[in-house]
Amino acid sequence: MQGLGAFATTRIVAGTRLIEYAGERLTPAEADARYPDVEGERHHTFLFAIDDDVVIDAAVNGNDARFINHSCDPNCDAIVEDQRIWIETIRDVEPGEELAYDYAYVLQERHTPAAKRRYPCSCGAATCRGTILAKKRR
Ligand SMILES: [Zn+2]
Image (cartoon, rainbow, N blue to C red; front, side, top):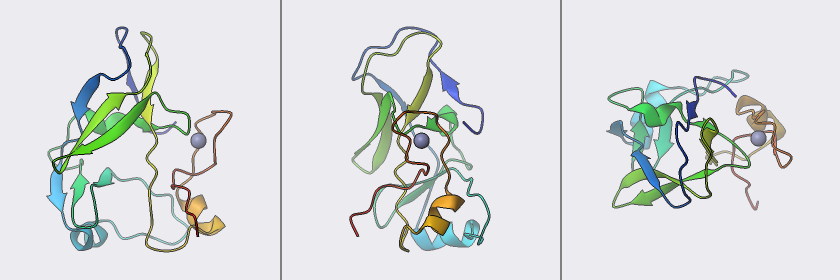
């Protein structure tokens, strides 16, 4: 896993709201201008798209939520509620376990093998799909 990671210090039951994914609110165009997607380069920002209109940039005024890594077999999920993002546990978490949720990024472009390589995953889960991009139907 890349970055710092966030770990449980105590037992947390499923369905616990842990933290808000805080940060500056941008339009998608502002986010693209701030973090241009460079061909062949590994992607690493703290962006989280709420919907088609709002992107949260946790690199600005963000909190510890930005250190939670992606997993293809996660113990947390990101819940969007009233235009805010909350990280919640989806199963019981033991002390010392790393917290993670499925980033499930969606690009405007097709999720080609090249695109997936720009957004790699090596979470180590048996079900790892090799990318933090969401599955696209077509
Ligand atoms: Zn994975």
